[in-house]
Amino acid sequence: MSILNRFVKKNGSTKFKYGFEVTGEKGIFTEYLKRIPQCDCGVEEIYLELVSKDEIRSLVCEEFGECALQKINKGSPETEIKDEAYFIKIESARACIFAMRPISFIYAAENIISNMVDGEIFCGAVYNYPDKEFRGLKAFLPRRENFDYFYKLIDFCLAYGLNTIVLEVGGAMEYKSHPEINDGWIEYCNMFKETPGKSVEYQNSFDFLKNSIHWENGGGSFLKQEEVKELVKYCKDRGINVIPEQPMMSHSDYLLFKHKEFAEREEDPTPDAYCPKNEGVLKLCTDLLDEIIEVFEPQIIHIGHDELYSVGLCEKCKGEDPARLYADDINFYNRYLKRKNIKTMIWCDKLLDAHDKTGQNWGGAERKGYFEDGSLKYFVPATYRSYELIDKDVLLMHWYWSVDSQFDYKLTEKYDFCYGNFTGISMIDADKRMKLKSFGFCVSNWAECEEVLLQRNGIFFHIAYNSMMVWSDSFCSLDYIENIKKVSEDIYKYFNSRTSAQKFITFIHNTSTFKPHMAFVDGAFPVKEEDYVGKYELLFNNGETKSFDIYYGLNIGYSKNTFVQREDSVFDCYEYDKQLFETTYRCRYIPDQNEMFYEYKVPIENHLNLTSWQFIPSGKYDVKIKSVKGS
Ligand SMILES: [Zn+2]
Image (cartoon, rainbow, N blue to C red; front, side, top):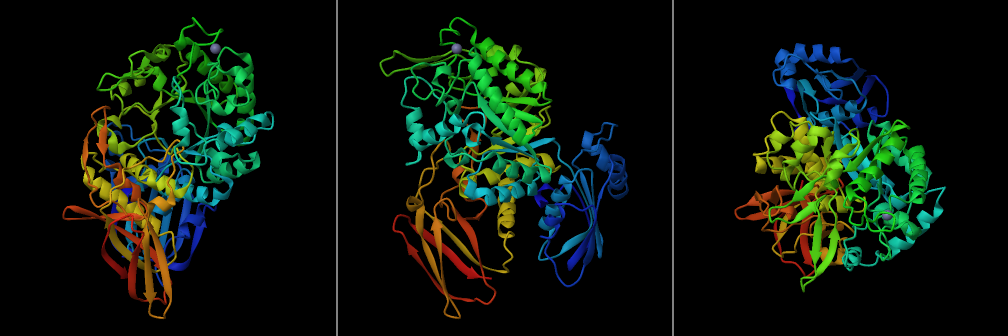
């Protein structure tokens, strides 16, 4: 994408001619070039070539000079070329793309498309590369009916320079060796589907801490192994690395629903933590891992291990060091997977002695909760000493970067880590910290893998923002407002370029009715009727009419949203107006005086001309309309 541009040289301009030929390397990536807008004259051939590092180096040197290479290592004499770098040369009748990996042909195709303005592109050259090798999105498995959307999502990730998807498996994939897991999963999910937030209410109804419930994984059902293979194939064919995530020890409700005999906490009717000293559960888990390995053929498996609340409780574990129990369980899987040439990844909150600004303990620190009368409600023992006990080659997904920035430095002393649940926009000292030794970042959507939820959770915004941090030389986290505008404009352009339509109706509007922002996670989902703002009815010159529904947070936003950024009062990060990013994708921001407006476009057929329109409100929201225009 053009917001990911690093080195660009412009000298004149050209277009792409209808039916241009793609020569050189052939593959799935040539499909992405076909989306380039075409017209009567211009580039007739796009040539693709896989080249060596040395060849990229000499192309870059020739075009941009030695200094372009020096910049990579900030002046160090070694001029390393990143594996995913690509080089584009555009001349009036021919374009060439050089890369070392096929995935970079897709990055380059999307770069060309986004650099085009009204069907035109500059002649010249582009040289781009990412600073970090791992750029991911964590998602749930989609429901069967939503595979087409899943593929569209992968294409979005590719357009924004990602190369990894972490897919939570849990109960949402068929297990041939243990069909009871899938039966239990369906029964369990059915407990929560009826109303939004029912699973959160259930989770909080106990006198001890319980894990959040991921019943939206697979849409609350499970996919056949053959179906999961299709999803994996789509990703791998395009060079996307797929990491299955199998939560174990904690978040193990899907394992234990039909195997209560393995529960660490006896009194829990739906246990979420297992006893790591029970050989039966380890056998069950490795059986399932073997099936996952067969389906995904992964290089890395993420084994969860976050938010462990029930440990050291059962007869076998009482008196044992919880940090040791925790580390032993991780090391057991790490060694099991290593024998199969697979790396292990975990969430690393339990390795950290974490406290927020108010003094409250988190992560691997000892935690206590109290009843209103002051008596002890729950106790979670410390596990942070496991930092010393876990195998050094376990990869960490570090999502406590927002709790205490000092953890970055502690982790680099011993482990390789990437930032997890990453929203770069909230990171304090981001420019400095992104230069530390982390191998990358991963954004997470803790809700059903579905377009509206991803948008309203700001996931598209965060993917693009994070990517800009690692794909651009000019990025500076202090240009906060400019960055937000750039990202949202760019995503809006991407969203509207997915249609072949040439004509649009553009609405600019807002609502002054405030609805508190809600993260759609852990079983909280939007209710369409509650968000229904009203509809536009449009009349066209030929007597045809069309109507378009407007929903809060989807294609209209709150008028008082602002580009604020302030330090969070509890955690070591920035706080921002979360509601603002909810509409990003379908809308762009139009700030006006002290108000925020939202532009939203719908495609219409070429022969239609708008003659009149009216808005029919639902009555629940106050709506202000700035303009409704045809193009
Ligand atoms: Zn136990």
